[in-house]
Image (tube, rainbow, N blue to C red; front, side):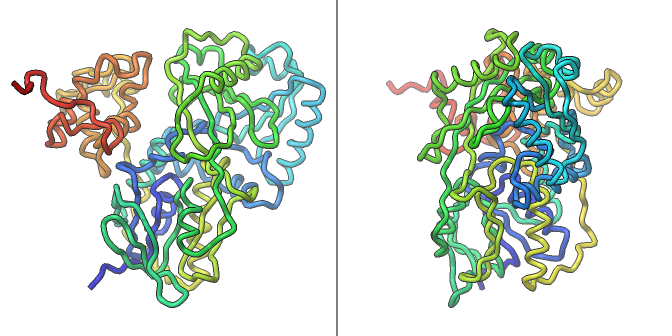
Length: 484
């Protein structure tokens, strides 16, 4: 007999993982499928990590409604998932008289959307909050409800919470098609076999349109929008205290300057529509655009503080709103598509909406009385008090061995991450769970040690350790393993 699930969720990014977690509150058999080697591998791992207040989206849209609803859920959600969140407030900065008119429009739109804590500041008030801003600042829109989050821990935490509560997770499992009975989807075909279910949820980010087309749903397309970023060393956070936006354009919120929850500074993104959904390359022209845009807000930024650049892709849809629907033909499917910004903010509200849609569609939802909302991340040695550090070392001496000097990540943390609910099996996966290699040296000093520790903890050869799965191996052979 083939395995039968109540719901299969395709895509283990932050949206799919939160959907799986929300459904695990009920007595259901759930399967979460991810084609990559780890969860949170797509847009979730490469974004600006902003929890938006909700003043930007068109009133009445899914984006506006779910942004505001999701924003309100973040304090409780991040506490449950042990993900760092700081409701530090955000600023949209006006640099011209025309921008001041835009701020007024955004303020009114935010009020229509129900965004909390909005205030219009003049130039003096703005510079008092952010003294390093350009002296050309004419004023700002302040949103007290805006904030910053660790998107890695949020995505990983949501997936781990789902697994803790009974969801089956299958990594490196790519959905290649659907199973049908008459005009209803009854399951999925994958590179690892067929799986049957009463419902299928598409939460596949950039690839949502491909799956929609395979299900017979035409008329929608994802047009990937690339955004390039710089990451700056922590000392830059001395001049950037919160989140700074320029006035938005029709396609982008503009080149931002923002502090992160780990006290780095992030610059970007620009916005360029591309065709290749796998193109994560940065360009000299794109990074120049990011740097010059950031200097318009904070002219005192220094290039010597740059420690990394990267690019992320937004799943911009052919319609200017989130697609959240249950199509009539074929039946048995929930479609979540075009979940671009403010998708990270809206994700917890999207998950709750999916639950209610399935309830209204007839899925029986008996409460799971054993549901555990809490998940604990790997303990970060660097943020503990001296007494807490000593207590941890007493339980496991490996916490006394610092492997990553920039971020003060210990051997104990690396080992713990390799044995988590969803283990770190790649270097990038370990980095997202512990911040190893995220400092100024970007892992240059610790990589050989890390490979050895991971191989030992995972019980595999060092030759099998990869950067991000697939063929991204670090080592080809042992030093002395040379053919005669």
